[in-house]
Image 1 (cartoon, rainbow, N blue to C red):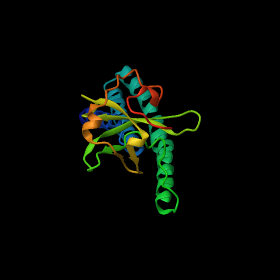
Image 2: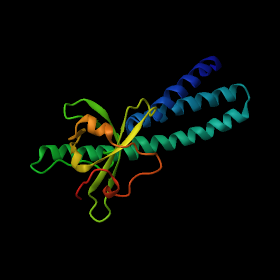
Image 3: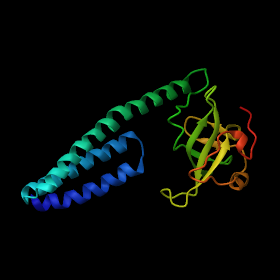
Image 4: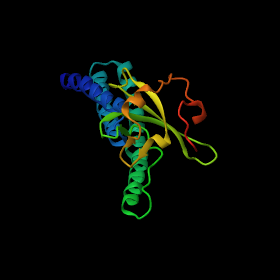
Length: 198
């Protein structure tokens, strides 16, 4: 039993860490917490069988934390995602313009006019007075966030759909836009090089 737990523990922890760090949606993150729970229970079993009280107490607490993660990601966040997808799907079938959830803006793929991938959305900034999109921050040239370049694009330079954003400007124009520093983002489109009527 101890030998089996000794193999299950690190395997479950590594797999779950990748699942939660990847942030591939509520279901995958929630399942990551399920696997983390299996790992913390296995570590607790090792602590019990080897009389290591500190290992048992630590992993008992981690089990509680993981159960909160399961509840949050498989119950609450999943319900939010499913609700947003439901509204989006209904919008596709209606005569009215399709809806896009504000929470769904982050992590959406961005493609060129020719359909070539250019990156993903990081955030959309809305105006306070009418909640319209002012600009979108796009991350490009990234591999798990390594070498990531952030640029801002005004809403008129993007075609919004429920599954991706398409640049209206050529790739070369996008790549000439100045990169954002992580801690300093424009307060409005007036601070950007492009002019975008709100």
